Every structure is written in structure tokens, then in C-alpha cells.
Image (cartoon, rainbow, N blue to C red; front, side, top):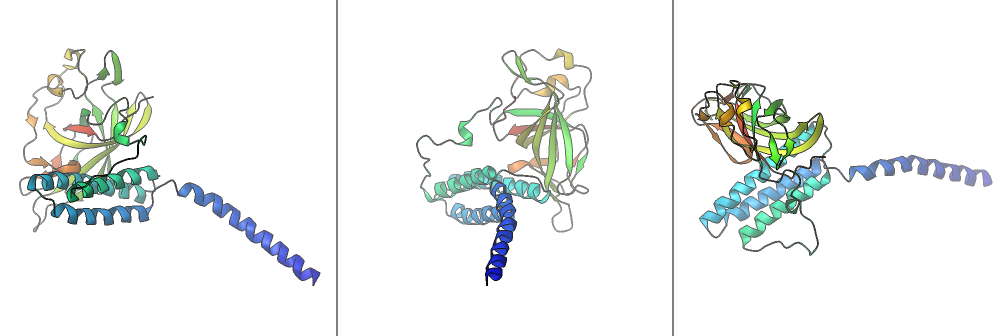
Length: 289
């Protein structure tokens, strides 16, 4: 009888030993996003779409539709990162969920109020605040007929981003982009499209996480040695026309939609040759240390 009890005790200890590591592993997983979180966001977007369709005015509905499209694109971007096996902080889920809740509240004519003293990502400006625009030149050719979701590409900044005399982001810094969605031109949908997003900025060899979207595509004939002519005051959102030879302005034949979607306006695929200049908007505060 004593032998049976002793064996039972050893068995219990053995089971607890096996359970221990499992508990230790489960704890950090709660701090990262998973596929179930993405599904919840997609369900929330579907609910928000129905609310936006019932918005009291056309102008409000159009505004909320644009915000919802941005949220949808951001959800797709996070989904792609999770599929690649990258770690996505669960705070990204909560921030995006709050944005969707706010859209639904506005569509219903109510508002979401944060508790006093609570913090929000939009309240933190960072060294480079939300809304800052960079002009970057792509290093790769991007074409909706050949691109694949999750393709990576790079672009380099064109001018120094300054705050007073301090250079925050020097010209030549690298932004890493990813193709988050792609539609090839076909018989039914004759217009191709690409959705591009940027997730990393490298400054002086240091990598910083980034969330940025394309707001405009510009055409040029390349640099013609005029970089030295840039004024010392070239700062946030500086226009790059002064350093590009044969600057042509907005690229013909494409349209930039919400969330960085670049669509062909003619019946063909989107084609962005290497050297295309993209105007990129920062969508989350960027802290440079």
C-alpha cells in the first residue's frame, strides 16, 4: 500500500515538472499577437463596415470609410508579419482595436472616452511625429504583374530630416518596405494594384521599427549632382524637386488610395521602376535613440 502511494507521489511530481515549463512558455506568448487576434480584428472591421454604411451623412460616411480602409490595410500588414513568423507586440492589436471601436462609435453618433490619465499612441509625438513625410527613392523595380505578397524592397531618403540644427535622419538612410497585397491586371479586373508599407528605418547603422504608408508617387530622371545645392533648412516633409534633375512631378497612370494602395488608372499593371520616388507618411511616432 505504501509502495502504491509512493509511486503516486512520484507520478504527481513528474506531471508537475512537465507542466512547469509549459506554463513558463505560455506567459510570453500572451504579450504577442496571434492568428486569433487577427481574426477578431477582421470580425470587428466587418461590424464597423455595417455601422459606417448607416452613417448619418455622406461626408461622415466617406471619412469613416477611408479610416476603415486604413485599419483594414494595417490588419492585413500585421497578418502578413505573423505569417512570416515575426513577433508582433499585442499592443499593436489593442491600438488597432481601439481605432476600429472609435470608427464604429463615430458612425453611431457616440464617442469613446479614455479614462483620465490613460495614455494613447497618438498622444506621444516621438522625435519624428505622426504625419511627417519623407521622400524616398526605391532601389528595386516593383510591378503588380510579378510582385508577390511579402516581397521586400528598399528605398533611401533623399534629404536630411532636421530639427533645428540637429539631423534626425540623414539623407541616404534606408527604409525597408514590404508588399502587403497585390492584384495582377487580368481579363476581369484589368487594372493592377500594389499595397506597399514600410516597417523599418535604418539610421547610421541602427534599425528602428516603423509604420509608414505611401501617399504619392513621383517621377524623375535621377540625381544630377545637385545634392550639394540643398539648403540647410531642408527639414520635415521637404520637397525633393531641388535635388532631382529633370523632375517631372506626380507619376502618370497611377492612383494612390488609402493605406498605401497604388492602382493603375489604365488597363495594365502598376510598374514602378527602380529610382521611383515615393512620398511616405509616418503613421506612428518614431523615437530615435
